[in-house]
Length: 482
Image (cartoon, rainbow, N blue to C red; front, side):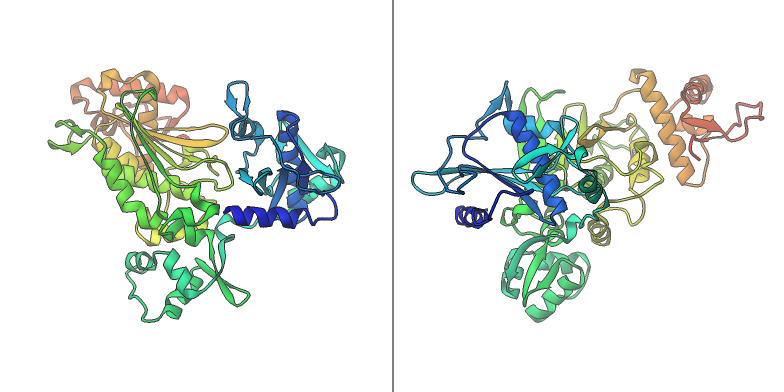
């Protein structure tokens, strides 16, 4: 928001007759814990009161609503050695994407403003406790079960449908969005009039008509923005690519931040990532000299998946981190299915975004594309990919070449499981022979493959097709869930 927009927001908020479940005023800083509790309470209160945001404002007297200014600077404030914003985000669950603005209300008065999105699906906790505002007092939410139940019953509006910029003319819409990209990627002729261009965007829910004017949705902005900085709702979801010098994050060589919508900048993003990757020598059955260390099609699929499956309501952004021995591709939020089922199942929390990116040719028409990733990973004789989820992110790692002898036991088991999954989705089965091909094991060394299969069976990640079959040579195997 611009300085003028922020000042107008403050002027509107102070007109409220009283503080409420979604608005609170303070003059100066009290404690970090108090701010965390207020963020929880205001997010929950905004949800209950059908508000898009809650507001915590420093610099306003709570009784009189007079703008007096504040000395509190939350962006500079630290809790121990940690920045306050990060300290708060780490202790909120879910980790909502609140924003902090510090600005001059006038020449003598400064304001610090926390803009807090209304929670969706569930209450927001701080340190494992959820709060609510009752009048001007912050209380534990569990003391008011009817209010808590209202939050759980609330049907969230999809992020894609929310409005990124309103009150626009057709000319302004076309100036903000790369409409040519939309028609080019879908192989459609470009309309001869602005109204026809906009109507097609309206049909796709990229733009909506509101109060006689037009509004660009978050979906339209995140896909087609000429400059993501024009859209406050989505600009913090720009893709980051970081190249490190070694195998850790101690020294950064270069960093690139995407400034365009995902559809507009995707090809350039993937090309730039691939330009940073080392070339491989002739290793495995698919590689030639000057071939990239990693299969480009796998990088493309994993980047597209990170964009499509991110949780837009969680703080953070899609990120590609390139190390000397691996690439980590991550996105905010946890998946809706377990990582073990990525290869055969597909659920996206952003269905409209996923549909358009598939139709534009950025990713697989059906499924997650992970079968394609694993296929090329095996073709390049690379170690198995690894998928890790934590409280806030999903991370997929693809590794540089290592010989079979250099893989540890867990990596061999994971590779065996992924090979069994790939065979299953290809209407085939894993055998000792197919695993030997996957690892480039000589036929005479079949016992090496047998040992890997035995370890995978003991780990419970694969199962025998016919447990009664006593011949190990012709035995077939499936993933545990098949």
